[in-house]
Amino acid sequence: MPQFEKIEYKPIPVSDLLLEMKNLSELMIDLAYSAALFNDKELAEDVMELESRIDTLAYLLDMEIMIAARDAKDAEMLIGVSTVAAAADKISDAAADIAAIVTRNIGIHPIVGEIFEKVEERLMKATVKEDSVIIGQRIDDLDLAARMGVDIIAIRRNKDWILDPDETERIFLGDILITRGAPIGIKEFKDIAEGRLTKLED
Amino acid sequence: MVEHKHEVFEEIVTRFVELKNTSELMIDLAYSSLMLNSKELAEEVQRLEEYMDKLHTDFELLALTSDFKKEEASGFLGLIRLGVATEKIADAAAEMAEVVLRGIEPHPVLKLAIREAEETVTQACVTEGSPLINKTLKEARVPEETGMWILAIKRGEKSLRPKPDTIIQLGDVLIASGYAEGADDLKKLASPAHQCQIE
Image 1 (cartoon, each protein chain N blue to C red):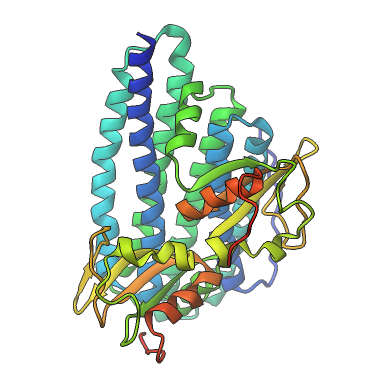
Image 2: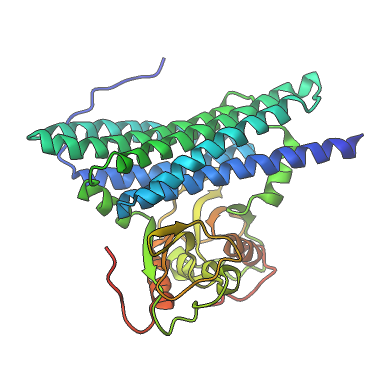
């Protein structure tokens, strides 16, 4: 049985809660697909933990919305906010369903992962190899979002996953990186991470 | 025999990727429709939802008829569940778009949150002097140049779903999603001479 705790009201702006729910739910989908297709149990368990974080956020948001509605007009507009939050929550539930394929040992046919890596264009796994120019660099110095429309969403290091790494995080030899973004950008980034391409273009 | 099997898998995975991409496009379009209070974009989400239903059924039928062995059943169950998850994501996107279709102006807080998010939605109008004018989307290389992905093009009253051979015209409004860093690059590319006001 899952454990449920009382969630105390905290005065957090609705926009902050929504923003975090949007960011987290989208991150979770990408992490969940990665966990399923690369058959990674730890990553799948991390997705499950994020799911409970989203539940807490949704709960807090509901309370804020209830407090904010003073009249019928407020209620009409706020119901939209609550619908969007519920949808973000549903997206995170879907991510948890995907992760559960791994945590419950159902698995996905191994050939699928192999083909998926070839045809999927928005998610990519890369291992940082010896000749890579990104070793020792900070994520913000790489400026990947502006340069190639790419974002590092997780790093596997010393058997642990670092999810949504900080901008100040450095890249080490042997890191496994999961990236998402523009199709051409992630291909280019994989070549850079694996040392086949030695120049970061502007 | 082994070769044949691989082909079947390739077909299944290709369809799954189509499901996955469509469901993610729907989320982007749904957030865009909320941010811009655009009924056309919200309707596009609803159309894609119908398309998803068909796609999902085809995918399930293909997986179920692919003649797998008993020991492969679990792996196929995993695939089926992946498909169900994409459908759930598409449903969530359709629910968001419904907010716009009900005709109540989305609460300002929604706009704020979508604009501030890591992956944001932006619009840029194509003004005089832009190198994009009269180029096809394929030639314009917007994702390569800016990291932004064009979701829709507003031309007059109409809203088009972009294809590689769609030609960008003066006066078009490009609706795009991507990391916030790319939004300014897109605006510079589309309106180099002066910023235009679209709200």
